[in-house]
Image 1 (cartoon, rainbow, N blue to C red):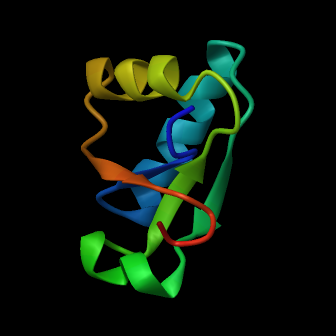
Image 2 (cartoon, rainbow, N blue to C red):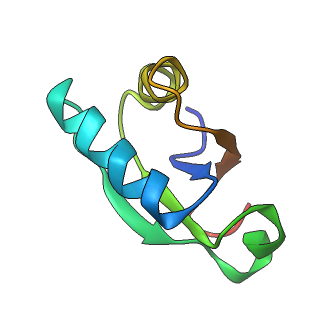
Amino acid sequence: MGKPIIIVGSVTFAIKGRDILAKHGIRSSVERLPNSTLGCGCGYGIYVPVRTDEAEQILRMAGIPVSGRAGRDGQ
């Protein structure tokens, strides 16, 4: 299973991404990134516990800039 927090470029993109995923039936939430990943963007990401690969593809196709992924434990 992939890492379930998708790192995006800003908190605004995280909120937009969460709303886009909801329209596709994917549950997600905006979360603060663990301290060890703070160099990877704005400090926020989208937590997607299931269908993470599909969610990332949907976000990219919608124009949401994805910087990578992180685990909830910072890995």
